[in-house]
Length: 351
Image (cartoon, rainbow, N blue to C red; front, side, top):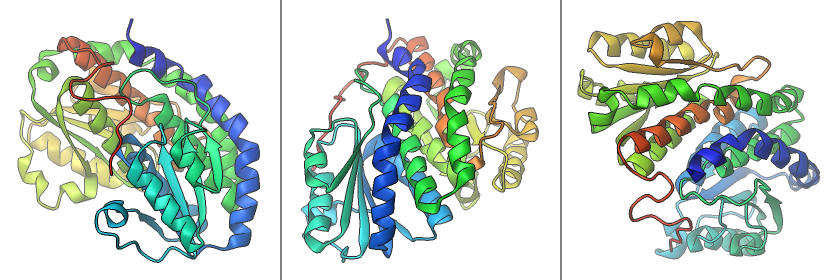
């Protein structure tokens, strides 16, 4: 029994539950945020939740027009030099709600007169107690060390908040379709398992994960899952940033995972994929764009997502699932237990 697999497969129902139960909280909070009229959104998070915060930065800036800053918690706990937050919406994102430095950010924000909000799976956590408002993830207990359903729950609720703040029906309707798309993505598991057991991946020590725009967060999160479950050093990049220097690393022994959904980011991703192919890089492609999928090195390396009716802005909630499954099966193929990575614990508290 692999707990991580169970929790990955719970995601369609978990996200559906998170959205349904979170809607009344978020609708009420969004009204009060709009009345508060913040000048910026300030997000504090660590680990997997920090990747959710990166997603939220793109989402909130695109749909609310407000600038978004990702917190440097050390300024609050080590240097005691916090920025001015009195006209900010300060959001803490944490599955456990136990990180002392994230709690410190919200406490300082509240002290300065900011509006503070916690997204956490632990409604009685220190983070929840520090915030004025709390949105519980409500995805159920997560027992595997590697976060999966808490990550997609965070993305879904952050997207729901963006939809309510901007009164965007496209996001609302897209979110209704997300649980079904998650269910369809789970059907890719057999192909991902097959690929994870190929010698190229079982013997490789490094790989790239590449995305852009909304799916840059997916590249970050898939890389993290590969590192923590199978000790596979995955380097995540924006496909644009990768061309600024790191492209010199591209060679046959360095496979790459490319993640993208139909939208403005695709042309650049296709251009990069073609350049990587010229360098002999093995490409595993995840998304719904036919051009991208055709650039997979083999037919076994193309993983098609069904994102019909789902805008690119919501695609990361779905596109991360193949990466989660691939990381889990690669860990098993290498003889590791993805539920208990060495040196890691479910709750990591940093100061």
